[in-house]
Image (cartoon, rainbow, N blue to C red):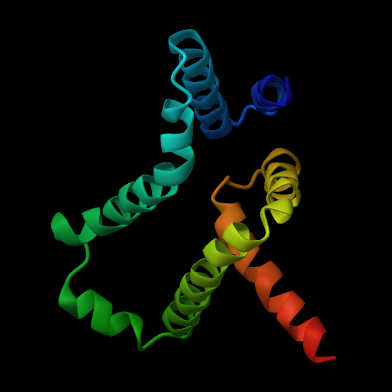
Length: 149
């Protein structure tokens, strides 16, 4: 029922990325129930994140493959303020994602809140639903800071 609600909100909010994702997961859930093989949905839950990261990374590497980004372009990116900020932001995002995965594995109760926050960002602020992993990392950093104080 909750997944159907997310699908409806995604359609109303015109966020096709979430629509496609919800349809895929809903189809896998139905397939798992019809076939009596819950492993289908479990497989997506355990391996889907890795495949998603691989596809996302491959898409980011396309400009290097097609020659749009060259070694000189990469070197030049370190010579501008926005390039330096982008390198730092990429570094922080990678670190955040790296600590976000273990947080979600050790504290699964945080996942619904991450989903709600990401969905709110998508629906109300026209964001993109790549946030749960990085949001988990930010959550980890904030909680680590709070523990120190």
